[in-house]
Every structure is written in structure tokens, then in C-alpha cells.
Length: 109
Image (cartoon, rainbow, N blue to C red; front, side, top):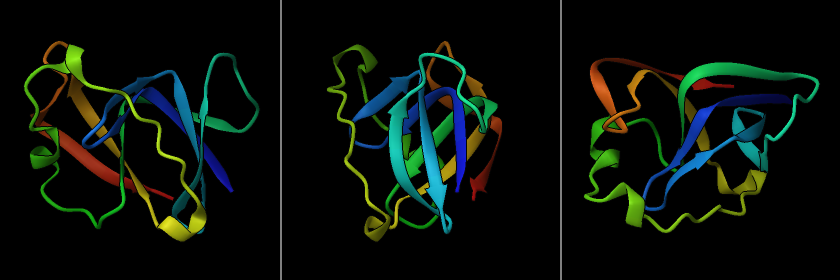
């Protein structure tokens, strides 16, 4: 089991979660929780952690939305059976809340 946190988590179709962390077991997300204070064994990354129930695809298409402020934030209740994956996206443009041409992504596991 590993724990990761970043500036934001991004859930496609829902929006950005600020100050949240994830727990991964067997390569899949098993828990999402608030990250309000330093917790033992949480690895911090700059950028955004993308949560997705699908295999890695064109990451940029997942960021097609018009108004960030009007996004309804939905925190998915994930279980290990759902097979959600996490990808670190860095660098990331926090002004436009979009990946940039240089954004690299790697699966967290």
C-alpha cells in the first residue's frame, strides 16, 4: 500500500479536489481522503494526480470543460474492484488548470 498527494486531484467529469490524497494497492486506487495535515508515509508530488477508471489515453481530452468554478465536485467512492488508476501530471498550468505541452504523465503504483 502506498499513499500519494499533490496540489490537486483531478476526477474527469467532476473537477479538481484540493488537498486530498490517495491510497494505492496493487496498482489501483483503494481510498481517497482529505490531506489536511502531514500524515506518515504520504509521498508528496508537485502537479496534479489524475484519477481515471480507464487505461491511459489522450490525457488532454479529459480536461475539456468550460467553467472550472461551476464544476460540481464529486468525490468518487472507490474500491479496489473498480480498477481506478492514478497518473501524476507534471508540469501543470495552475492558472488555466490545464496540462501544458511539456506535461509528462506517469502511473503511480
